[in-house]
Structures are given as structure tokens and as C-alpha cells.
Image (cartoon, rainbow, N blue to C red; front, side, top):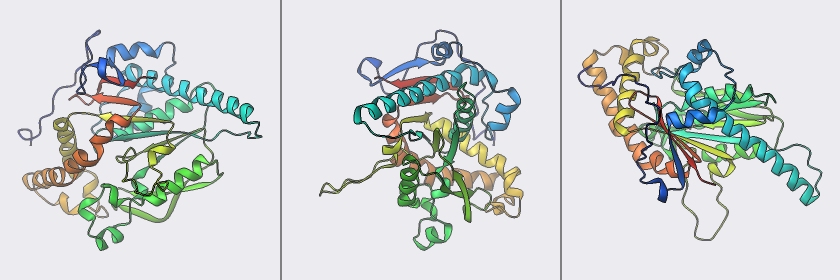
Length: 337
């Protein structure tokens, strides 16, 4: 396996290293680009409220994020997000006065987190949730993933979509929009469906309840995708219409491929060994057979989805966190105001 899956050594960036972005010169870009070292300076006096043990519990398999990475990248990100949240509160009160309406409660601030499979979206979302919830004003922060909004496997099989799981058509778009609309409307109790990675299916009658959070983090590969507009001009809401801020986790295809295959091979030695796992059959394969399966799943499903549906949404994000081959953030791109 070592000859087929290239895993480059973990490295830290030199202070003052120039930021280089694949989209070209920053002069013609809607973003300001910063190296990780430059971005770390924006932490200012933001306190470190997570411990090393907590970071280890929050990170996903094969994600090397540690307390140094939190200090280097995520404290500044949480400071930026907190500033946006506070600014939206100020705007709420200004608009309340302007319109002379009696609204007493601001709607939740919604943050979308997008990116490929295996790129580290879940870790980023969990770390930001904990950091934001520990700001001095102690905002109430909720986290929901789009996995629960996938159509059940029975529906996907009936529609011939099991090999398209994760593609836009495999999600119940209407359910996602109704959920976000209810949260944004300030409804007191909004339920989101729950997904099991063990059974690889939506759990029937299982829900997580969102109860008027100050901030909602909504994480998933497809959250920044658009849809075709009707010719008659009818209103067609998109998931990102409900976002106040959006983040895209970026990396080279080659690196994401490595991370995906390596994670699959590790799961073959761990979670897949559970007889209840949907992928238990892969644990019975030898290493060469399992590696071939991982490569096929990447090539025929995940790479295709990345190129056709996920990567094209990158320019729609407010913040792009680009990872290097060591799975650590190497560059941060922030949309200009």
C-alpha cells in the first residue's frame, strides 16, 4: 500500500512564506490571500479555550490537526466569525429601528462549511463550534450536517442512485430548505434527521433538535451548490441563500485522493470489522483487493462529484481554507468587502 498511496511528511510553514493561490494573482481576485503564518497574526489577543485533549477528540480519523494548528489558524477564524456575528446583531438593531418593528430576537447566524469528502470539513466544523461557543458572550452554537438529509438507501436503490450517493440528486433538497427556513425564521424547535455512518443510511425516526441557536454551523459537501433557474422567473431558493457566512475547505485533488484512500484502508482495519457496518464485506478482503475497491470508489464516485459539483462552488465561499499535502492549512483566502 505504501507504494501506491503517497503520504507526505507533516511540515510547518516558514514565517513570512508568500501566499500562492491556484486562482491567480490577488490583484484580479475577489479574495485577499494570506499564508498560514500571515493569517496567524490575526489571532491578536484571542484566548485559547481548547485543550490539546479536546482537539484530539474533535478531529476526524487521519486529520493531524493539533493545538498548534488551532492557535495558528482557527483562533483567527473564530475571531473573524465572531466579528461578523456581532456586526449582524448591530445591523439587526439598526434595521429594527429603521423599520420601527417590534422584533426582539435576531434570527440565527448561519455558517456553511463545504468541501470534498476526506478534506476535513467535519473537524473544522466541530472545532469552530467549540471555539465560538466559548467566546465571552457565550453564544449558543449548533452543528448540523447534510448527511441526514440524504434520501434513505431504499429510495436511492429504487431510483438507481446508490452509486450517486453524495451527488446533488441524492439529497432531499426540499427537506434541507424547509429545515433552514424554519431555523432562519426563529422557530423554537426544528428537527434535523440523523445519519449513521455505520449502517450507511438515514436513521428512521431519529432526529437532532435545534432550539433557537445564536449560531448554526451547517456542514456538507454540497451546501454551496446552485440549481438551474426556471425560465418564468419563479422564486427558486438555494441552500446558500440562508447563509450569513460560508467556508470552503480546499486541497489539491492528488492530496484528497491520498487522504480518502488512506482513510478507507484504516477503516477496513477498524469500523468495517463491525458486523453491523454496511462496509463489513470490505474487511474480509486482502489489502490489494481493498485498495482496488478504494481506488474505484474514489475514481468513479468521489472524484467525479468533486470535479462536477463540489469544486465549482469554491468561488462562492466567503473564506477558503486551503490545505497542503500534510493536511494542515497552508493558505487562507478571505473575500474582499
